[in-house]
Structures are given as C-alpha cells and as structure tokens.
Image (cartoon, rainbow, N blue to C red; front, side, top):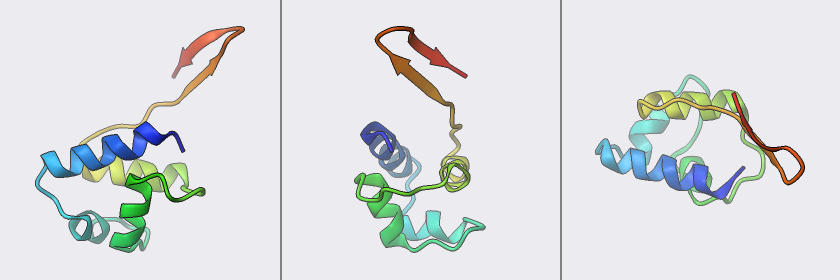
Length: 77
C-alpha cells in the first residue's frame, strides 16, 4: 500500500472527529482499531481493496487507482 494512503486516511479520520474504534465499528468486515492504526501507519502489507473502500466510505471519501511508469507516465481510473 502506498504510504500516502495511510496518512490520508488518518488525516480524514481526524478531520471527521472519529476515533479508530468508531471507524472499525462501522465496517462490515471485522477489523480491530489496531488494524486501522496499522493501515494508517503503513504497517500492514495485505489490505484488500474492499476493506480500503469500506474505510474510505466511512470517512466520506472514495478510492481511485493509479499506475505510474517512467515509460508511460501516470494513468488514473
């Protein structure tokens, strides 16, 4: 996971005045507050796109994908 994603999630959570416990409680996939912390601090290697979308949704954000390469530049979708 890109490091900036975790930082953005943490920033949004704080802007919304939510605790990690609040976010975890609103997810359909069972996740502990410590897992939310690990995601925010880029300390987890395996986060599903589905979980990332759920967390983003709770925070009122969306998820987009991006592929970058020196040969082709950046492609967003």
